Length: 174
Image 1 (tube, rainbow, N blue to C red):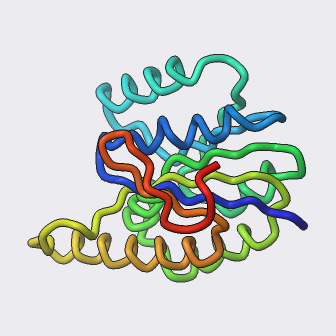
Image 2 (cartoon, one colour; image 1 turned 120 degrees about the horizontal axis):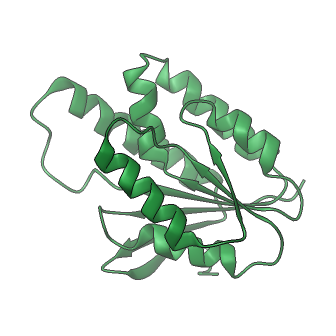
């Protein structure tokens, strides 16, 4: 199998999703957007609708808040371009579901090793700020940091986006 995996990291509103969408839309073939968000309130529903409108036509949207490895196995096939937005929302969902996060992260890495297509994963870099003041936030930050390191290790490219500007950390920028 021949996977092409890119991890796009950045802070909130850094332009990481826009950059990731550009990577996917510039490649030939079908485009699949795996959305990990769960809609809990009207504001989040509005965000999701705006993101769908901004993407425009030509995307298949798959909503998968928990079984991201399964969604990748089903959709990241040869010739297909998959965008996962985002790993930190997926991690939040796992924590809220009281899932075994290390086991789920291992499942994700296993799925990434099996995919045969282009996969671009978006995630929020949360390790650049102060130490959170509560146990849940510290646990989230620690799991996110480990997940990012593990995904970056298997990715062919890693890009950090700040102020809409991509900085290639690993591989080339395309």
